[in-house]
Length: 290
Image (cartoon, rainbow, N blue to C red; front, side, top):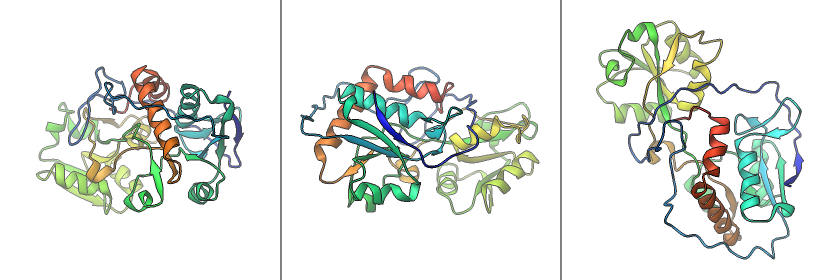
């Protein structure tokens, strides 16, 4: 079994996943074959050789505890989440379970801990940026976090579709990639930009805007929350763009360990091919993000 779990931080609650989403991509995207399934990010005809890991003393995954449902402390006080299950499956696929550990640190400690040799891999939702690529290697992406529209039911009336947004005011957060993406993808929509996310969501709840455009995962949590009180729902359609949202979630390794990065890519491809990556995804996003 994967061992060595260390969790110095605590959180008080676990977000409830209650999402109702349908596939509809715009930009660089791959549609899932069935509603709710994880879009396939790998060419399943590809072959990635598994390097010899016999010389690997241990594989320590570094993560955090404050990014539910990806990594968090569950009600029993154990480290849990999508990333935790994915790390365990990678170790099983590589047949190195006895060498694997998962350690939790604060987000700010992730990069120094990896650089300092306190771990071999970071699996914590690190954004793949050009400056980081100068110092680290990254696995293939295993998940995109799409942008979504959430709309006020009363403000939208009977047409709860993206087409129904025409002529209505759409909210977003000023200065964000989602604002830029909205203006680029939907230049004809009337847009109102807000100082922060709480102000944007308050305007949506109060029908000052008919809909908002933001991070799909965060909107799925909010629309299902007591704060929203059933006022609003996600519209069909999920939007991804490497230009605006990056390459997706990846696992970060030190630059002097290309064989480990290749091994992780091999494991991710095999987990995708065998459907086990999709099983983990549906465990934490039962109705899907797309």
